[in-house]
Image 1 (cartoon, helix red, strand yellow):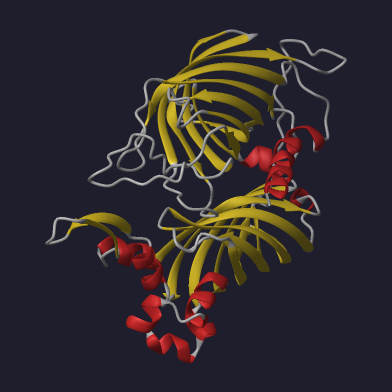
Image 2 (cartoon, helix red, strand yellow; image 1 turned 135 degrees about the horizontal axis):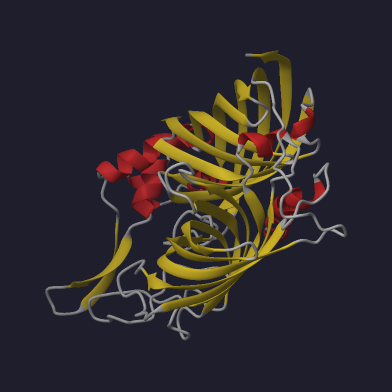
Length: 432
C-alpha cells in the first residue's frame, strides 16, 4: 500500500512537466528554501513534552503561465511541484524526526486587492523515526512518553499554508508563511490521534529557466481563450481499504466499497456530482461472527445477519479539479445506515485504574459514552485524495479509467485508507 501511495503521489508533480504543449517561458521554474518554526500540539494525555518545532523544506516547482491546457487557464495559472521537508519535533527520544515528500499546487489569492498573497496545499507521505511505544496513561503512572499520535513509520501528510511575497524581484522572492501541518496513518494502526502543528515560515524563492532558448523579459503573457462549456457524466468506482477496529483488535482488515455517481463537468476542469455508496467492513463482520463481548451483552440481534450489520449505506456530494491526468477529489457524505459504528465507538474507550474496597488497584476498560460528537461522526463523512486518469482529461475523452488513493474519515477522524479504481463516461459537451 505504501509503495502504491508513493507512486500515485509522485505522478502528481509530473503533470507540471510532462503535459506542456508549448515552449517553457521565461523564468518558468523555481526552487524555494523554507525555514519553518512553530509548535506541536499535544495529541493525548501524557503526550511527550515538546519545544520549538523546527523544519527545513525544499520546493521544486513550475510556473504554468505558458501551459495551453484548459485547466491551467481556468485555475488562473497556478504553480505546481514537489516539496521535501525534514522536521525536528524537539523530542528526539519519543517523537523523533520526520522526512516528508509532498506534491503541491499554489494559487494566487485576492490578486486585485492583495498582491503577493498565495495559498498552497500539499498532500503526500512522511517517514517518522519514532512511533507509538505501546505505553498507556493512568492515574498511578503519569508517564511522559505516551505518544499516541503516530503508530506507523509511514503516514499521510497534509500541509496548507498562506504565503505573502514581501520582497520580490525578477529572480528572487522573499516570503512569509503561516499554516498547518497534519500527519495521520489513515486509521491503519492503533493509535491514530494524529500529529498537528501550527507553523510560521520565512522562505526564499529563486526563479530560473531550464529551456535551451531563454526568453526575453518583455515576453507577453499568453492570451488563450476557452469557451465556457459543460457536460454530464456517470462514474462508478470500487475500492479496497485497510483499517483497525480498536486497541484490542489492532490487526488490519479490509473495507470494500462500491459507489456510482452522476453529475456535471464545468469547463473541462471542475467536476461536481452526487452519488451513493455501499461499504462492507471485514472487522465488523469478524467481531459479530466471533460473537465477541459487546455482541453477546448488548447486540445479540447482529448475529442474525452479520453481513447486514457489517455494512454501511450512504449518499455523498463530490467535487474534483482536473489537472490533466491528475484529479484532486474531495467528498462530503451522509451515512444512511451504519449500525455497527455504535459498537466501534464503544470499543474505542480507554483503560483506567480503579481502587477496590480492599485498597488494591484494578485496571479496567471503560466504554466510550454515546455523546453528540458520536452522532455527528456517525452521520457525516469526508473523503479526499488523488486520482490518476489513463487518458488526459484535457482531451475530453468520452470514456476514461482512473486509479486513486484516498483517505476516508468520520467527520475528520480517519476511518480507512483506500486504493480504488473506476470508470467515467462523459455525455455530449455543450457550450454555455
